[in-house]
Image (cartoon, rainbow, N blue to C red):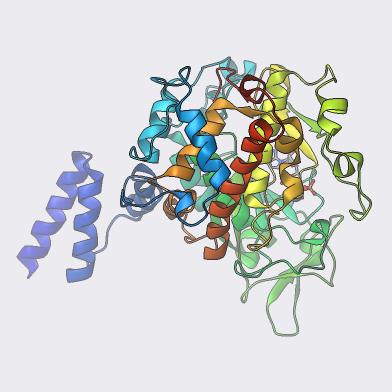
Length: 480
Ligand SMILES: Nc1ncnc2c1ncn2[C@@H]1O[C@H](COP(=O)(O)OP(=O)(O)OP(=O)(O)O)[C@@H](O)[C@H]1O
Ligand SMILES: [Mn+2]
């Protein structure tokens, strides 16, 4: 027995030296099971974070019929025929069929991703920590490139690095913590205050919803699979209030609010505008809380811009865009502040918000130095995935009213609709990269397939019902 153990251990070391990590991990797992041997923890962590990503999209049965297998819309099927018959799209990467896997399709589209300028601060960034390398690579057209593997190291750091400082995030109205990590990086922590399968109460306005960090994690993977790469890296993580927060927390705003509940659990409520009181404490079990940590983007100035489709507070007062569908034509398209690129960025955000069901889109944010020639950073998705049966029609108002969509975005949506891979399948697979898989409750994944059909149906209506010209609706601005 001892000889076999020695042999297995030496094989693992050899494989590691040869950087054949996948085989090493398989062997590790077998050894663990059969002999109770232990494996290097870092290897397993990196493996669990990266393995499923590398295999994302590839393992689906190709017989599956895409999102339309469950939610088929006749007008969308007809729209697809129109799309497929367009000679200007034939032979391009945007051609869609129902045979190619979504992974291959996206990989091809990603090859034509345009490189833009880097942040001016990137020249002076010489650090070697993953978060520093990540920031150095931020590009005018995307936050990170799909082939840049540094993101997996960033995620591992966010999940495992010891915390050295905790304060309330200055820009947040909720209980959002800003933390420093022992490698000098900074992170945002949001607490999971409601169970993932708890639907938002139908009588509650969105502004009263608790933020859902699992929705932020799911939106990060949705952003990736739609080929945007505009959401900051985020990973699920548990924190121990006593060990990770109290010793490093700001005394006045955090530590002074720590107390024991009648049940004996450790709780705190922090200092912020909403839900920071003894009535709404965050309580550990007994001091462990779950949530998600995202990388704090530092070193470049971020500008916040109010979206034209913001909502009134209180939300039972309707704004003009909610009452008048000509709003985009009269107030947005005519406003010289909005370039075509900016408008298409709003459409992409609207696609995300409709798919996730997020009504809380009040601002968008950009790296200031790129002015209008850049993407919107996909921050603040914590109010999605709260109602699985309800489709937030108003969340797609930008797309519906402006009748605009970026060609690359449309192609990806159509591809997921016709399959073989469906949006829910692809997202479910991607979410395996997060340690708190399944991350999303199944009915929310099912809702994605339904909403995808509805979204495409609205785009189809722009052309086939409202009579707009194809080239005025589907815009190829060379970006994806
Ligand atoms: N990862 C990050 N990197 C840099 N800045 C961030 C990050 N996350 C959040 N911020 C900043 O903090 C602000 C508030 O964060 P967020 O919107 O997630 O919190 P919130 O409490 O949900 O805010 P709101 O009440 O406005 O919805 C963001 O608008 C952004 O400017
Ligand atoms: Mn928010």
